[in-house]
Length: 397
Ligand code: AMP
Image (tube, rainbow, N blue to C red; front, side, top):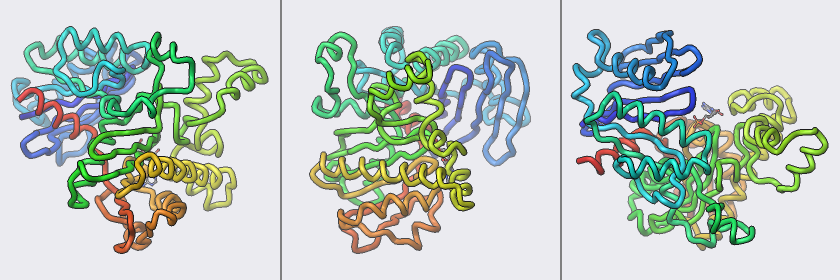
């Protein structure tokens, strides 16, 4: 089967066409600046990227350009659109309604719309992508894969906030967690790599990218995760603050004469390691700055690692132990310095770092703990698109 995986944002759209039998990517790319001017990036497997500037006033036009590129006579990956057997959509927030992926129909769309309140930036944009694909490929089955679904197994003790209970009852204010597709993919993959039954393991997944979260997966089920009602909670991230004292909100709003919504923009877009360092949200820039003596950049990196280690400790406690720790996403897969710093906090777990393997591991599966460690540590590249493809195939076959 060929599955088109679509991740639609408000002004951009990422796509991959995957052959599910071989799990190979036939073509991939993105549409940028939808509704502004428009740019298509397209890359057929084995060929260079192509860039096309063309007006994309709406997502429908953007997807039409993707489909045209996929069947282009010279560089297309397929001969006709009939070779697309299904579309898998990344959907951000499924609230409490969706605890697994599902075939998209009118009822599902309505359910996702009901969660719009919880993800006002993401869910409406995701649905625009769904509708545009439905218009252009009316007979192709579509599947929605939710970022929040994997975390729906969390017990109430983990998801309830210390707020008046009526806010949960009236508004569904609770921890949901995000990056679920990645946490699910990586936790299953690391069980395979360790060679043990997924259902018998206590796994902590550290998804460390520009957005970052940790999850505790016990006996094949997520029991806790660091992101909350929104992705703002938890770790320090590229530009997000992560956990902080909520009183800071009012304090800074008054001092800086900001509205709550302006302050939330600061917390989402101008905080985290970029906010602390004043340099960048990108760990490559931060490392270069720290190495040339920038103390704030060094502090940002150190704080980031410290907070990951604190969450690992908390989740080892939550599961009464841990068997495997997995590092994934841009930083987790590539930044050996960050991994080494985090592992430096975890000696009490009986875990040792194999410095040599850690240093040379960038983007591949590798066990980075020493052979005699009580807890294994692994680098496991995430692949959310492949996970969405697999979920799609499982539902439409
Ligand atoms: P993601 O959100 O998973 O795409 O991760 C993006 C982040 O990964 C970037 O902002 C960088 O901070 C980090 N990153 C990517 N490649 C490297 C690398 N080679 N070394 C260190 N950090 C990296």
